Image (cartoon, rainbow, N blue to C red; front, side):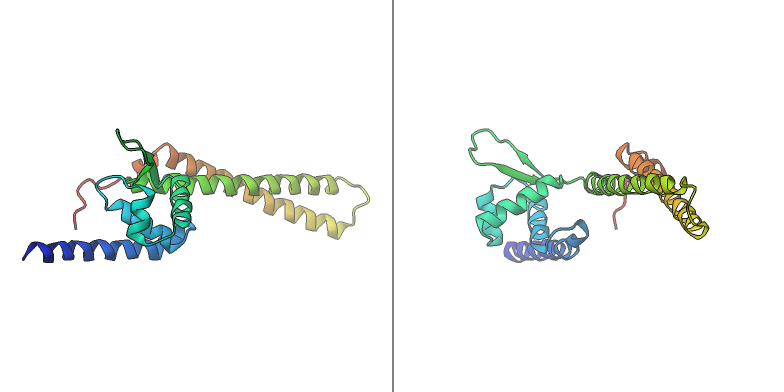
Length: 184
């Protein structure tokens, strides 16, 4: 096989993976173009400048800058320094296990905190209503059922926070270890 055909085969194999990343990146709450950018950076052996990324993906500099910032915020890409280089350089985070942990634990923590705050406030208001002596019995039963439902959801969010703790501490890998030799 000549060198040109080998390079084309490598490019084709990489493009297939990049397109799969772009297709599924919505699971992380971002657009396919951001997935393509991550895929491009993932296969680079050297950090890239915004201009290099812009040229490679044929995106506007504004769009490229926004996409890179999104990936940096998601901790999927990091800014790096290289002696003698004046432009900002970026490279992909290659530890996909840590990327998953960073992204999903941040989202779970945020969502859990918002929901717990709303549930606790609503539960306190319902308990206050329940303490009214003049409350109709049918309303009392309804409030008690709602309080039970809210108490159940607080148990769920406590469990979810403990699960997030296990991810953040990497204890999850004691239960679901990373396979060392997983060549397929």
